[in-house]
Image (cartoon, rainbow, N blue to C red; front, side):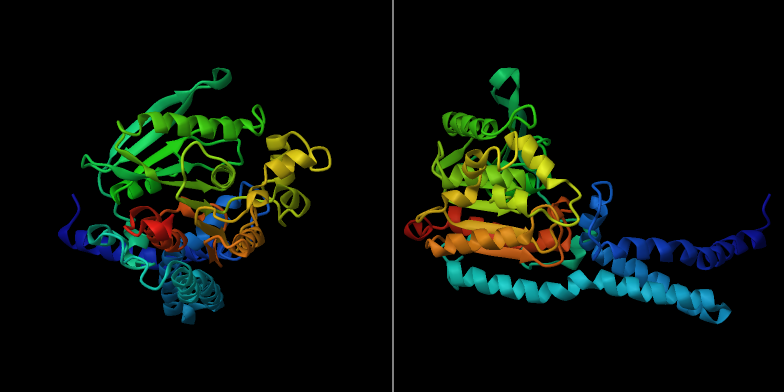
Length: 416
């Protein structure tokens, strides 16, 4: 039996042990994670660290602050604590970088959005819909607790086609209340080789709760199925959606295509070239758009091996299949009177370099098309995998406003 006085000493002993030994473990781990805020990943094994570190920067700031304080309290006990304190200070600065850059990036984007859509672009959006939009581009509490998502109706694994014996399915996300809603048709990324309709489901659920019918569709994957199989599958999905629109409470006059990476590539090709359904807006998250240039100018370091990915998708090199590469490049379909486009690119992207997003933006603007470039300086490819991170909070804030303007505005002539 433990004596009462000994029981009182146990918590004090625990506090002593924590204060003595945690800094030794916390400091190097925090420094290692913080370094990936600025380091590019040389391999796919390390890529999640480069993607995730900037997105957990508020956590890194908190961890490094705690470790720094603990080490400073022990600095008189030896040089090792001084060295650990310096490491923590350096890691703290790295963790703060995305948050320091956030205000300037947001201000630049806000100015561009207002220039393209108008200073009071949400005035024509119903008040009830405006009230549901996120109030700020970044909410610190959400970075820790997550972005709240209300309940929605979900119908999964709806088969829409069976090409070559491959069962293609879609997921349907709708608000809880029965109604008729504008639609967002989403396409997942994954180098045209992997993924499914459930990818990025947090976004689908979030947008459904905001008053949209979200349809997430699948397509056949390379290298077994090469381009244009994927576009054929997208068109098949759109035809199926058109047939079932009334049953799904979907407004065929208000449709946006949205994709990430390879999915953004397919969304752009569909919207800019020909589509079974009329498209009112395109949301492109870090999509490849000039495949010849992408092959000839790969990123460094090239963790994904971009050239191998493109060969698997198209069946060869640009020298061997030049015309196919051109047909598969959305930038070659830019012409006047395209649907408005929101281009979201990561400033530190080492898969689809941000300069490709800038080139696409410049081409769209040159033809008089409405386009907004949202470039996030500190972010890596697939940053929105961390749904509550600073990058996705910023992207989500403007994405939902862009879509509200395009799909919910009562000013039909302006948004068409």
